[in-house]
Length: 390
Image 1 (tube, rainbow, N blue to C red):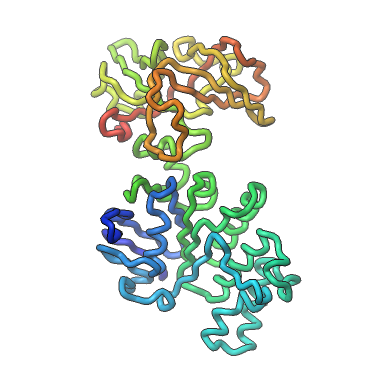
Image 2: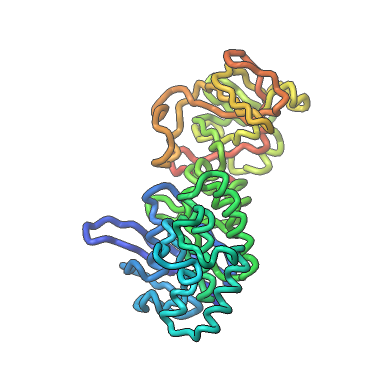
């Protein structure tokens, strides 16, 4: 078993800055866990503490049931893959992959066999005699992966390994890394700031903000059931639309007011959020995913009470869908993400984004009717910013 356990782990630097605060996380044997969050959230610090490259200020780290707080990095049975590849430019691909084995005085025949197996897995066999400077970015990343694989570690630790690649190669490589991890069945902790990377690769995803763990769950559960406003906005692209609103419930009707728009709530919405009854007449935060907006012409079954009107500001035609930007006259909600655009924070008008059917004929400047799937709405307490669920 090569589970990784972080129990009450904290990191405080000499200047008093707290990078990690009481982190509790269990990564199961053979699991692929992704640590994700905005810049400066502490995800790389957490990874480096598991690797032994950073000391911990409090708590316990265990790898394969062994406490490793005071164990040297080389003795933790881990292999790291870094953002910058960290390859030796004067060595061939073969020597780069086998370097750690050579240092460990592994017999030459075994080094050749293990490097050969790793090269076959990574499709690097024809490049073994080349130097890193003769390789593409994707090939260099494969070499870095090969160097980790040959060590046959208990745990892989990967720190933003794809951030230096172009967009197309990133997509290809993240699929390859995820497939490779499944084939090798090695416990893996992967750090990224890219939430799409996190959602497509991880068995589970842990979301960090300011050194605090916000939520850890499967990618789909994070998307469908965000624990708070920050997770709701951070997970998903485009981000969830967030507005200030007020719910009004009577014996015969249920509505939510967002700015000047009054939207009827479906029975499904109330069933999913029974605790909404405690917020009757009180301000809260309403979240609507872009895919839950639709050109009303393509949503004939949505009742009139669950439609709004707005003017199209911007269109992004992507072939498979159209991103439609429009304004809602409700105060802009700050998600808490330091990397989010700041131009509308504090504004009394929120920019909203809908993911429309590609056959929609809406035009910029046109006043349109937008249908809302209210059964998929999200609601958050305005003060605590926690999800209102049951």
